[in-house]
Structures are given as C-alpha cells and as structure tokens.
Length: 195
Image (tube, rainbow, N blue to C red; front, side, top):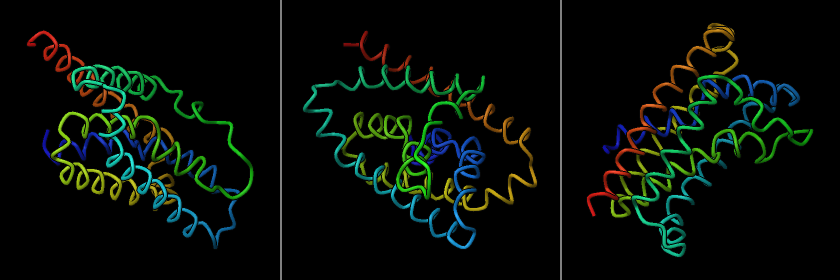
C-alpha cells in the first residue's frame, strides 16, 4: 500500500461527509464565537489520539501476539461492517448518547474523527509493516488534514450540497470502503494459506 492509497483509506474511514450533520448538530449548542476554537481543539485532540495509536500500536499488537494475517482479516471484517453502515445508513445512531454542553473529546474528537474504524485502520497499517511508520504518519496527517478542511467548512458545504447529496457521498464512500475491506480480507486469507 502506498502513502496515497493509505491516506485515501484513512480519509474514507474518517468519513467527513457522513460526520458533517453530526458535527453541525453538536456544535449547534456552542456559542457561535467559540465554534471555530472548539472545532480546532477537537480536531487536534483526534490527531493526537490517532498518532498515539500509530506509535503504541505495534507494542500493543506484539503484547497480544496478533499476527499480520489475523490483523488483516479482522481489519477487513471491521471495515466491511462500517462500510455496510455507511451504505445502508445508521452511522448517526452509533454514538447518539453524548453528554450535554460544550463538547470535550466526546463525541467530536472521539468517536467521530478518531473512532474505532480509524484506530483499527491505523493498527492494521502499522501492524503489517511497522518499519514504514513515517509513511503511515504522513498518510494519517494527509487524511486528517483533508477531513479537518471539510469539517471546518461543514456549515457552508452542507448549505450548498444539502442533506441528500451528503448522504449520497457517504454511501459512495461506503461502497469504496466495501471494496477495500474485501481486498484486505482476501489478502489476509491468502497469506494464511501461503504459510
């Protein structure tokens, strides 16, 4: 996997278009003059968490004695389940019970940006080829940067595109993620049979 393909995978998994309505509804309770500051803070917290996963991931996987093929198969299954939710709807129901007031870490940083799917994808990338961590870090920063850009302009984008177009984009991204997850699953199974 190249840096660009890893960045695209992470961008699809972070799902900024699917998260736009969720971000807008959570930030709706925040005073308008604080929204940009809160959004920037939450996005930076999410990046910190994802980078921490990148560096702690290999040690965590080694401690659990999880092999690369197992990680590929598990990652493929997890990504497939997330893709199904993206295609058929229901992602907005995954984390609907959140505390009232100004968001801090939950739900914007975790789980909307640095959710189970993003952390599992990072663990999958670094678990397969730990030596390429600088490339995975670059891919992560690129994907996060693109997601942060779209989420920063979510009010304007949602106003221009509308809910139907955002929903269509999320489902298209879900279809892409389905293909990626099946490819991961097949690679993991092939690796098992090669040994």
